[in-house]
Image (cartoon, rainbow, N blue to C red):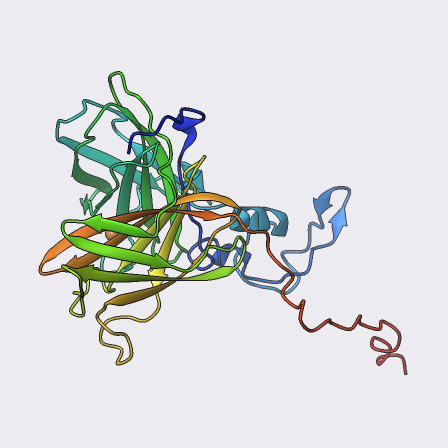
Length: 328
Ligand SMILES: [Cu+2]
């Protein structure tokens, strides 16, 4: 726990971004680049046939889709606004916030994802004290949750949600607990986490830019736990945060309770895609005997990607005749 490393200690955040959750909808639509006239899209582009509602310009959509979640307080016209960002450490606070939509009004309609309309994650900027909370939504679009920031320091709060009719977003905002604090370095990489008498072992490797299979195995008192309980519609929830900027990745398990093929432990399999090399902090929530616990890991997505086809060289495509078929 006590590490002598001070370098960069406050910059340690983690964010994990997954392929599916973010921005997928923004890229829907014609992929061709519209004609450009003097730096603008041709004015009649929207009128000539695609018919659908206006999409962001392709360049914007591509940019948004490639930015990990949680790094921005605003995205796609949605804005996360907290009423309070400075909090007294150790004191429970009625923390309130809103998400406003592109029309500037608080969003009141949310899709239910994993049993909840909004998942609220709070962690210190040095990746300690992970909290996964479920605020209450009032009729006027104000979210409320009892929140305690345990110690002085800088924190990041994430709202993970999907507005009705929209795609999933994770917005993030900084919170501060007043007082002096000493930032902690990212814990060393670990494969085994213990919490409340449970031992959780992590297997698998994070490969930047690729779907990475991770498996966690839960045991208690040396015996595999085979009766994990569903929590929020799954046997485990994994949030990954990138050290350095706390990019956020909510990873979901492979399979779900009751699907006839997913065992209730001891292993839970996840697929995660991390956006870059570097350190990540992984927070696994699991439920057993009526209590939810969180196991924590540090993992490094460090290996350079090897070309996918090293064992079978791909012949170079021959451009010659293949595109000539419409010349009659
Ligand atoms: Cu949640």
